[in-house]
Image (cartoon, rainbow, N blue to C red; front, top):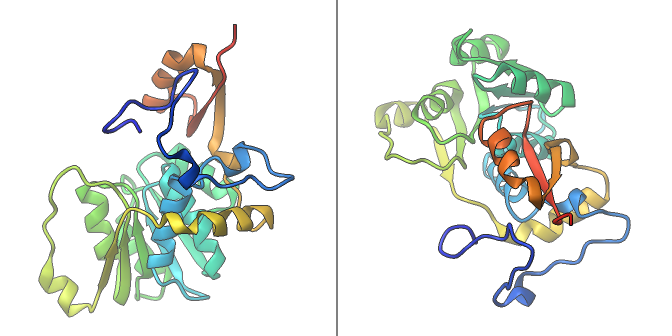
Length: 237
């Protein structure tokens, strides 16, 4: 929806074969509690899962948007000692640290990200980096900041082809994993939310009825007012 056929931001939507992709919301959870399991939370979880995180690892996430924050949130499940958020938006970095999904925030406008991560890891680099942005600068940072033998997990949507520094990847024995998501993880994510092990409620920063969706797009699209996700509620008559 929203790509090949019209999206769902309407009063009524007919979903072909909807019964094949339905999951029940467990008692005690709200719609907002599980709102992102079918999209950005599954993507973030996939990125963390493919990063091969071990307990005590240092993990750097390039991109502090909703997908990146979902990657940070789920990366905690593997017990890393440190999660580093990387973004040029200082407000989002501060938010990620305040929410406890990141331990450190690095702004590439202020520091060399690779050098800063090596400094905090005794010169090694991050054990895993997760690229959740889809741009060349963060792609290059993810490769530069990872330690020899580490893993680079790519979940950002790249609009342009990227060049791979093959000699660097080869010399450092870097493993690259990439992909969109694993939708089969949805039931598992719902169970984790039910158990209180993860939550994405902090992403729901703004709410308004369908009547105000144009205003919502202006605020969300312009990254105004600290907006991460604008929750569209039913049309108010």
